[in-house]
Amino acid sequence: MPDWLFYVLVSIASAVVAGLVVWLYIAMEAAGVNAAPMVTGKEGMVGKTAIVKSIGKEDEGQATLQVFLEGTLWTAVTTRKKSEIKVGDKITVNSVDGLKLTVG
Image 1 (cartoon, one colour):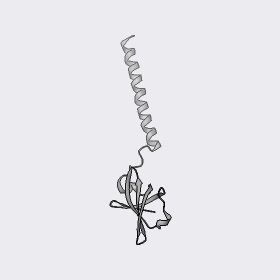
Image 2: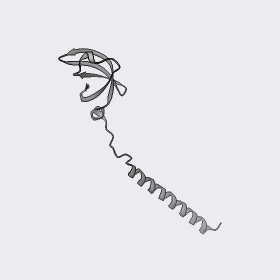
Image 3: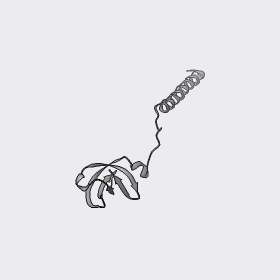
Image 4: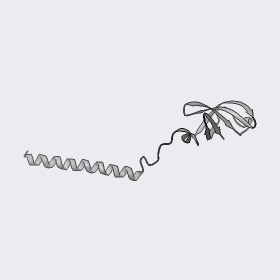
């Protein structure tokens, strides 16, 4: 094979690979990949669903609970009556105050 043919084929192959990389980048941007920023910390917990693991006392209209959320047991309070909640219920996180969740 002549040297010039080798260089032409390498150039064509390089151009094809570069074109595919550019096309893939444009396709990912159009699809919105990585468009939403990752939410962590307190803000990331609000709206998540926790599972009630135990129900404590009811004090001043707030029941104290132990809930399981993302692999961790949390202390939570709710304005729902103790009689309305059962162990195993799924409950939504409304807010986070320090290490205590407010659930509804």
